[in-house]
Every structure is written in structure tokens, then in C-alpha cells.
Amino acid sequence: MKIYIGTDLEGISGIDCIEMIQPGDSRYRESIERLMADLNAAIDGAFAGGATHVTVSDGHCTGKNFDISLLDPRAELDEARGEKMDAGYDGAFIIGAHAMAGTLNGFLDHTQSSKTWFNYYINGERASEQHQWAGRLAYFGIPLIMVSGDAAACEEAKTFLNPVECIAVKRGIGRNRAELLYGNDAALGAIRETAKRAMKLVGKAKPYEIKYPAEIKLELYRSDYCDEFCESHDVERLDARTVRKTVHNGLGLLFR
Ligand SMILES: [Zn+2]
Image (cartoon, rainbow, N blue to C red; front, side, top):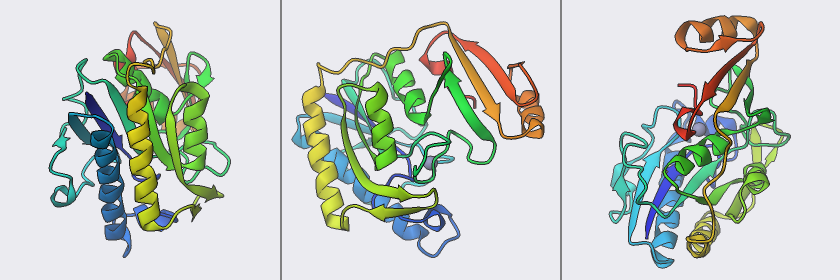
């Protein structure tokens, strides 16, 4: 069984304030070590649950967060972030997820850009990075079977994935602070067990279904953000702050 694991940083265990994900912060190194520890716990759980091959991909920001010296050597790295994804995978995990922009008590809630994106929609429904991920995976016939992150991200996953195994490692207190729900070692144990349990969903969980052609709509916070966005993207402008595009499969869900 082949498993593909994508990561983000906001929903990693042990990270409880916005400063910790800022590269200049004194605790940023700790955050990266936690990222690698959560990822390794998920990899270990996948193998314990029957995986024979695990590929990992760094999904946060520009994708240069991993400390490869700390990565479980059994895992293969997809450096180009998605290049190695193909129809040969049986399931996928997201480790370190956060909820969509505008989620109450979602720790560091956002969709692609914290600064400029207000709401993102797929076929008229507000959607998140998790939807984008699940849609991309579905293009290759891969179901998203496990999510770790804050409580709001896990709740979000359950609104559109069924079945899915989730582990909430923290709870947002407002946007920029979180209460950790486990000590460090206990969080790793819980992630490992959740990953192992998720392996039982292989063959049962279905890839996330989106109706195509799909209308993708994006509302930006301000009209000048929208001006700039239109200069660099092939989109139809609907009003001062809103753009639209039509996509024909799960590879087109992101605005890059
Ligand atoms: Zn991120």
C-alpha cells in the first residue's frame, strides 16, 4: 500500500502562537523539529498499519521547511511537491492542517494567502486548502484518509470527508493563540495511532468528488489586491474584489 503525506505548519503539535511560524522567531527551529516529529509519527503509523511505501511533501509556504536530516529514512521525499503523486497511491494524509479563512477559533485560519484572500469558493460553496488538496488527490483517484491539525481543521475535514480519521492536537483561542491538547510525546503517540487506524480506510474511503466543470471564485480583501491578482492570473473579474475561473479537473483548483 502506497501512502502520500502532505504537510503544513500551522496545525503541527507544540505550535501554540503565531510567532512560532515566523522564520525569524527564536522558537522557529523548535517548530521545524515539531513538524518533522509529527511527520515521522504519521509515517511510522502508516507503516505499522500496512503501508509499503510512503512519500512526503512539504506544503507550507514555499516548501523549504523540512530538515531532511530528521526525516524517517523509510520515507521518500517529493521535493517538487506533487510531482511524484500518481494513481499508484492508495491513500493520503495531511499533517499540520489549518482551517479555511474566516473560521471562528481556527488557529491561523486562512486559505492560500492570509494577507489577501477573504473567501474562496468551489461551485458556490466556501472551501479551504483541505478541499483543494482533496480535489487534487482525487484527480489521481486517491482518497484523503487522515488529517492532523487544530480542532477547527479537523471539524472542517469531517464536513466533506467521510470516512476520515482526524486527530486534533490543539484548539484555537481566537486566531493567533492555541491551547495544546497533548504534551509533546503524547501528541506524537496520538498521531501515530490515528495514522495506523486510517490505514484501515484504504479501500473504503472514496476520493473527494467535485462536479466538473467547476466554478472557482475568489474574493480578495481589497480591490487593489484584486487589481494585482488580475495582472498575474488568467481570470474573469466579477466585481471590485471578486474573480472567477472555470476548471475541468482537480489540478486547477489552486490559484498559483
Ligand atoms: Zn502553511
